[in-house]
Structure formats: C-alpha cells, structure tokens
Length: 292
Length: 308
Image: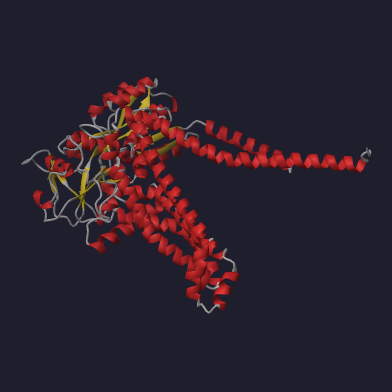
C-alpha cells in the first residue's frame, strides 16, 4: 500500500514537471473581443502554418475581459473593439503596464433585422432612439405596426460600450436583451420578426437569412451599405470603428512577429476575407508609434 | 502479585497499538469532516470581506431596495439587486414546478412499473442527460426551445424566464430522478408486502406506503436538483435574454444573479466598487442557497419526527 502511494506521488510529480515544461514553451496569448475572434483565429492558423514552432492561442471573453487581462498581465495581446477607457489606462499604469495600441482592421458595425422586416434603412438618430427605448414600434421608422424587440451585447463587450458611448450617448433601454456574442444575436434575430441587433460586419456577411439596414448619418442624408468597401473606407457609412489590439510596451519578440504578420499584405488579405476591412491610411501612424 | 506472562504482555501491547490506530483513524476522519466546515466558513468569510467595502460607496438602501443593476451606466452606476433576485427566484421556481412532478413521477415509474430491462436502458440514458454541457443546453434554448415558446404563446422572442425554467428543469431532472429512485429502492420490500397483504393495490402502495417512507430521500433529491438550478450560469446567461428591466411575467426576459456575476467579473477592475459589489451580489446568492438548505432541513426533521 505504502509503495503504491509513493509510486503514485512519484508519477504525479513527474507528470506535473512535464506539464510545467510544456507550459514554459513560449506561445503568444491573445484574448478579448468576440467581434475579432474568428478573424484572429484564422490569422493565427495561417501564421502557425507558415512558421512552424511558433504558437499563438486565441480566446474570447469580450473586449473588457481582454483589456483586463492585459492590465493583470495574463495575456500578451488584448483584442478590443473599443478604445481603452481612461480608468483602464490608469489601472494599467498602476500595475506597471504600458498599454500600446495597434489597429488591425476596420469594422462597419451592422444594424441587423429579421429578413421579413420591411425596414431596410435607418438614420443614426433612429438607431439611437430605438436602443434608448424612445422609439418602441417599427411603424415610427417606416415599418409595420409591430413592437420592436431589442437585442444587444453584454457589458463585457466592446461593441456594447461603443454603441452606448458613441451612438446612443445614453443608457440602453432596460428592456434590451443582452446576448452573449455576435453569433447569438444573429440566431435570435433569425427567429424574431420584430428584432433589431448590432454585429460586426464579418458576422453580418457570413450569416444568411438576415436583413442588414443601410444607414444615413442624418435625416435626409444618403443611406449607405455597410458591405460596400468604398463607402466604409471613405467614411460615408456612419458607424465605422477601428478594431485594435493592446500590447504591453513597444512590440517585441514573438508578439511583434505575429502583429507584423497581421499587418502584412497577406494578413490584411485574411482580414478582408473574413469580412472586415483593411486598415485605412489614417491609422497607420498609430501603428508606427507602436514600433511597427 | 502474579507475574504477567509473555503472552499477556504481548496482548497488552497489541491492545495499545490498536487503541492508537483507532485514535489515528478517528482523528483522520474528524479532520476530513471538519475540513468541509472550514471550507464553508472560509468561503463565507472571503465573500463577506470582499463584499463589505462595496457599501462604502453604495448605500444599502440602493443595493437592496432598487431594481436597476447597471454598474457601467452612461450617466452613473446603478447597483440595485431586486430585479436579479426576482429573476433568480422566478427561473428556479419555474424549473422546480416542471422538474419535481416530472422527476418524482419518472422515479416512481422506474421503481414500480418499469420492468428490469426497461429500467436498465432508461437509467443510463437519464444519467447521460446529466452530462450534457450547459453551453449546449443554452444553445438549444436559443435555437430550439426559445422559438417554440415564442410560437406557442404568440410572442416575438422566446428568450425569457420560461425558457430558462424549461432548460434548468431539463438539467436538474437527472439528479432528481436518480436520487429519488434510489430512495424508493431503499424502502424495505416488507413494507410493500405488508401493504399488499392488507389488500392495497399497487397505486395505493406506492402513494401511501412507499412514497411516505422515502420522502426524506425524495426531498433531498429535489433540493439537490434545486441547487443545480439556482447555481447554473451558462445556460441562463445564454437563453433567458438577460435584460436589465424588472421581470413581471414568465414571458419577460430575466437576468439572474449568476449570469450577472459571470458576465461582469471577467472585465471588472480589481478592488473597484463594481468588483466589491459583485462579491456582495455573490454573498446574497450564498445566503439564498443557505436559506433554502436550512428550510429543507427543518422541514425534513419535522417530517421525520412526525413519522416516529
């Protein structure tokens, strides 16, 4: 019996040492935004196929979670579909973390509806009023007499914050259903005739069986299509945002190598293939400051 | 005074050895059982210590008496827990309303009516149901049960308290069935035999003899199932809609305590008011489950003493 216990302990120790060794093998840990995750996984796959011996692991959890893990030092790269808040930057500094921003793609946030909904265009003001709960019936924005059901993201999502801070400039209606990711919003919208939701353009392009609204910046303005590359890049489509990553300090080592791959023509090709848009010129300066 | 012979000395030594061994075993068992108590006390203390700082900035009145929970609100943070408590109570009560009759009924069927072959097929199948990951159940809620509920009640979205109750009922069924069946199985055969001998039929025997004899086990089964339901996170987070507003009916979206903690704890800054507030919310959940267990314990004791 005693021998068995000793043998068991020995095996456990050896096994744990082996695991330790495996854990020490260097890999780049990427964490955060649900909007970026599919694109990042594709980028990591191609990068690892091209560079044997390099490892990149990509996980989700939301922009807030990603940013929290860069502040707490549990990830190398944070994916974020929003900018870091001042409060978060202060916390990072307190933890001796110097967050540096890299822009990797451009997103045109899509307002999606059920395919049976006749409403196909909205102004930014309409969208804000709908999500604030001030417009509660589709007939007020040119649709049928039907109560609007709101679908949005959960508070750990960067998209949730982006909509609230940049479009609504107020709180969401408390009746909004908070969904646990872009894909779940799409599923819910397919099943609900009265639904409205918002998702990153990559998800909207990929999904069949949903309606995507054209959006105008103001009443009387032209309505633009979020799938049209030109209108998104020159800013005609009013709800665009950069998708970024945060790293600790200037890029270096494996982290730098992976980010350089993301920004390379090949990486940007993958970005476009996944439905998002390549980085416009205006953000290239941001990346130069990050040492890229 | 007689000189103890070698045999006696040997025996006495052996007895002392045995006593020591017994003492050691007693100590080991005692320390393993006290570990559970220490763990529980430790969890409670940790929750309490992390929860108290929340009330430096949040008034207890706001926390316990208002309904809006939105710590990342645009104008200001709202820390009201009532809507979440109501959501948790609604979803759990709904789940129990479905799962208890169904689960106890199934257990009775398995125990009394099903033949041995059918039972051998059904029991493992029910236990496999327990192994379905909660994220899969949640997904079923979104794509299958949600739309079904919406169609049935003529509403637009089925992501609501009823959906959550249904899914949690499915998840707690295996526990309730399995443990209730064990309890019924543990009733001595002589009880049924006596009942039959007195002229009772199988239904009367089941309901008036076996059920009362197994009631403590059945109640324990339901309580364990309820524990599973009240603490379940991923499923409700995905399938109940998670709206901030106070739910009025079972057709309204709800956000339970568990899903709010799961969503927010990942992104919250350590040692901020929001962080402490989440621990305070966790403490409330802890007290709720504790109260449920206490009440069931009291009921159980009352019932058992009545039986005697």
